[in-house]
Image (cartoon, each protein chain N blue to C red):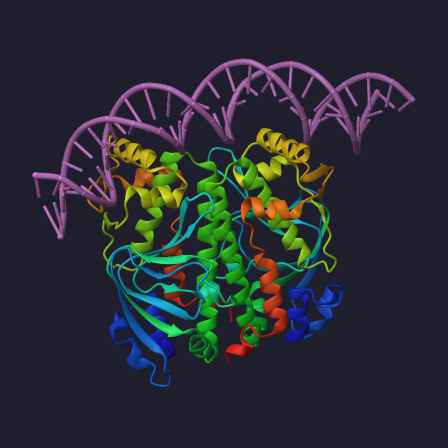
Length: 249
Length: 249
DNA sequence: CGGTGGATTGAAACCAGTCAATGGGTGTGG
DNA sequence: CCACACCCATTGACTGGTTTCAATCCACCG
């Protein structure tokens, strides 16, 4: 059971589709579908279930006092949603589907049961949350000290590496189901600025952008530009080698 | 052993001072002292030890490509430093003492050993990192969508609640061993802006600020102003009640 | 065909940054 | 003890990147 579960998370294989069968002992596992723009839950709702993304993109977001929107995290297939809420009773942010999605959900207490049965799994979660933590800290760096252009480059590279670490082929093309409003609300900019920077990046020959798809024409230059570190790739490598902790024991 | 350890973390009591005695089985536990401004380690150094703050304040920070500085996290007594780095081999950021500090450190692999022996402890770490995660997300909200004044108010309230959750008495006074440069580098502002906003907040009667000490004269109004949620207090309450997970079992 | 949401482009306003000068507190060394 | 250096804080004038406001265009869809 553990192996199947961690495989889901790492997406080493694609057994996601028969996940529920792996958990005969558990009762409360469901599969859900959401359409483009639908909310899975909203900030303040009772936190009752942990989700695993099977298909599609989602974003967690907050609506701020001044009416602004802040996109916090993006979730793509095999991501777990809700680990950071386990100690809470209410969702700290909303979850919205950015395109048609399929999710698997496990009731919170059953998820904790599964987790408790496997120290390995808990250990893995600790490492995973550590990765999340480091990435959030770097996002803070980017949001506070970069200008609009660098923020956007950093943002695009981060999403690219997040997706690349799961898809085997290292494509220079990225499916991006986000409007420029979404990108703006993720970076603390406006759609106007995003539009201007995107066309600037296009004119400079770094990317090509149209209809939910970004082509990276000079990834190296962009990585150089913002001094980008691919934490996702490093993490995957360490986990795959199994020497992240094994070597420590 | 576990209990003593979690007590350290929660600082329910102050057994920190005899921590090493609690771990007779472990070999590599040390105590360190650092002076004001000293670096414990720098970004890129090999990550070998986990630290627990015994006394003083520290900050993790990054030096950016353009020469700017970004303060990421503050650590006060009983905080654990390094949980987010367990999967890595290098420190993703530097750690600097903001005043004279005492730290306890455990060699990384021994820390993992201790952790593995106690599922409860791992579970606690997962919850703790979840709290960290939620707070980082809210910091991102504040950094991207608030103006300088609101950022600073949010920042002060966050530090106040971080400290208050450990100190029993709910003081309206906060020891703050930070220069205005530090605050600026934490929020993506400049020392000039910080200075102007601080005096504005003083003139408006919200706070009184002098020499590393902030007096909160109207905390309620400030909380209202930025719609502040005290995640630290909620977390402490849930852990203290023991019903965070127990009730789920 | 008109309606809608997203993207583009331009002009003006504004918040915070930058530059610069001053003042204050602290510690050091002559 | 004073002089000086150093760091931090304060204040004012100017600059500039981003927002705001607004108009237009485009693609998609009922």
